[in-house]
Length: 568
Image 1: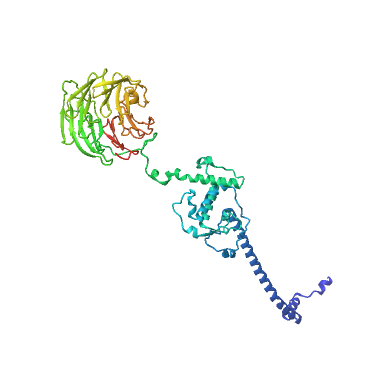
Image 2: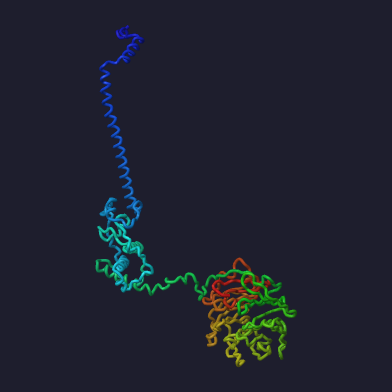
């Protein structure tokens, strides 16, 4: 047994001594505790004070960091936290702690030639009305509040670039507007070809003298604006479309309700024509019925129907004065329907003639003469008043087509010999005869309303367009040869202003082409790609050009609206 183990007390005695020591503290310990309590009070106060100071320092640091971030964002993206304020005094700005001599200030001299225009305008406004004689354009409207408003351009970062001097702060509203315009012109310079009076400009900026020259050139340029931009003074060109010229390429049209929707025909339609009032349309076909419709594009109300028992209608036409309708077929006679008296007269056979068919005819524009195609090259002239035969004309070949010109004083004819004849109806003589280029057998003729152009079609599908004066002067070359049809040309028609020429063939489906006469090109979107025209047989334009009616072999009269023309 060791010495340590001999001196060790038992466990029970050790616990008792510990309890006594804890229960009976000494006086010295009491004194030390009292002194420690006194010292603990000032230590906790100091700790609290330090914590508060640290919190304040952290707050100040956050505020400073936030300010630095705001300054950086203002510098990069403009005034996000300092919006533009009008009319503040300098004392209030000083209280806000704004540094006017900021490093962000700079003087831009790179665009003096452009800035000068707007700065000069501002100086003119500030100086008074005496400066208005300098040739500058007067504004249409002036805001009186601009002169009363004062703007501090030093307070907001993104406006400091507008200062001319470093210590400049408050400027008037008009000066502010002019400087903004000048700055915009500097950032968005126009292309040289778009600048007015660009040849007189001098873009050198070597010194103040060159800057003054640039200002003078630009001011002289803007002085001439008033005579140049008259088109900007009215919105008429934007609201009202110009109707003078029809553009080539695509034809603007829309399909309307069929003209004969209330009473369609069971047989092919051979003739359609508008009355001179543009509201009445006649249709005639092999079902022996002559129908009249009131055309409005919506209902197309049927007005009247006339049944001709012994005459399948091959052609029907109004007299140009609108008083009568001439109806013919493959018969020795023809009918005349009087619109005023509402009666039908049967006329023929013609005295001294044995023609078995009077199905092809034309009416003169002055409503005085009706020309029928006769046998063996004869052309029969009938008076529209008396309905009597007043004369005949004789061609070398067979007659196939006729057309009037020069207000009914001249007549054109073509036929089996491939020639185009010009007849003077006053003397009943042929005054010109020439070959239609490339034509062996003429099948169709038509003239423009003015008579300056005429078109000749052949059985090969070729259509030649001629200038009539040049043709009569000896020029045999056509202005244009149209080769868009591949079968015999049966029908041709100019519209009211001769900007559209319609050509068609009855031998093939959809074989109807609309030609843009000024450019002699075919409209690419006609016929409509998703719709069938069937076999076209006849066509007519309304007097104002707004409607186009086409009769086909299925007994329908298709009606279209041409958007280029305002009136029917």
